[in-house]
Length: 229
Image (cartoon, rainbow, N blue to C red; front, side, top):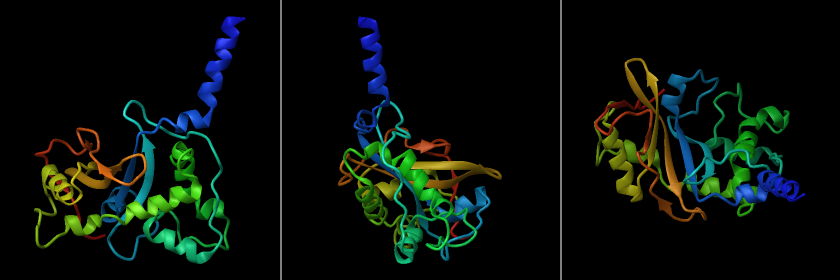
């Protein structure tokens, strides 16, 4: 009897989305660098100008990755103005055309819906869905990563800077350690994403966990950072 009660309690704890989402300890804002992303993947459309666009805002913790925590379903945007505004910074490279309110949201807003389901639900006990998307937009525009990397006043040796050059340029502005994410490309690694980490309220930028890179190599390694498509 005691064993069956214990099993019931454990099962209830495992499937309770509030308990899972309540474990997040920080946010990770992950942004694509468009020119790199479209070299690694076959983009169906490109932004009108080279820029960073949002991959997602990911609640996470220091002991295990949080993912698909359960919770409410995605609430699709219904007016074209709101869709256009979000598409400007949260860009789906695998849509043939800009998302439209007149078409099925399950295809037009699939990327945003997936990000909410996989990541946004993990902080839903603190940020409901509208607040989560508002926070993602706010943090996306807090730092202009493109201006940081392509700064003529404090240039880094582009298009093949060292990992340490990119890390230092970003840290100098944010006062925190970023995370660089690379993919193999031709004869080296290409910088595809930059992540900035924030506290649980999304109010303060903090150090991302070491080593601070994913598939980029050592700090002395050179990585490719193209400046256009």
